[in-house]
Length: 353
Image (cartoon, rainbow, N blue to C red):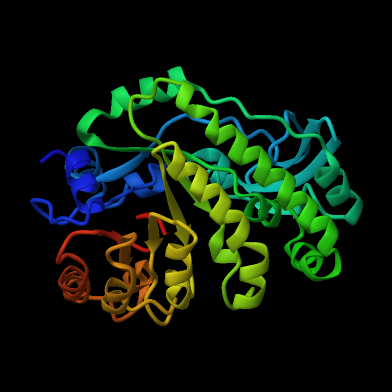
């Protein structure tokens, strides 16, 4: 089997020729200089079974057309650089300020890692402008999607991004304010989520007219912010479940799948995830980093969702770390997850963590 066939066989809840193994290595200079990095990269390129990103929808700035420009506002050579980002949208400008370390910019660190000093959405007025903005169907880059699928071939399964309104709002805002708006501004929040959900569903349902090389697999990075300790089930049922369910129904209507990334205490929510239409979830962090027991998850939802995990990346940094410890964790994960398919083996963080 090639990697694509192996992953899809597991996702059909049938056992492939071996357990699919996901592996990603961040290719920064400080990582690639480490012993063994070249061998890991070779495994990633030639043997690992990965979901690989391809172009798809242009979601703009939280679903709005946007032009982005950057201004360097402070540059201290050898230490850090502060940059202002301005997103110009039909609802006006939204501005953030970010700080990169020297290592991030020099290639020693991760250029995608930075500290946010000011978020784009910090005030209630910002949120009102965002919620009241007119929304239209978003464009899908079908030609670029198909080229991406062709380039991947049998080396993996193509995957593309899906706008999650509440998740993107939380990541783009002062998160304390975003949580407060769930309670203090329910009408405004409902307006925002309803309009965004209508936009996403409309955009998805327009896709059958496009000739796509592969049925779309969409991924979100949102739900980890709406489970304990952040939200309980009452607020999850009110603000997450009904809107996500409508989006997932639209995904399934066009023959697609939704893969959710969710760190933390997701174990008590896996059945809810399946009920609202999720097709796959990672990374299923075990205690003490999360509350996931892989054997239990397999019993509860192992025929409803692809389960991806759950080797804790943190063990590699313990003073007591021994290679044999990881071998034992891998053995246990395969014993619990592999029977009957529906499982991929991966760490809970990428290889640079």
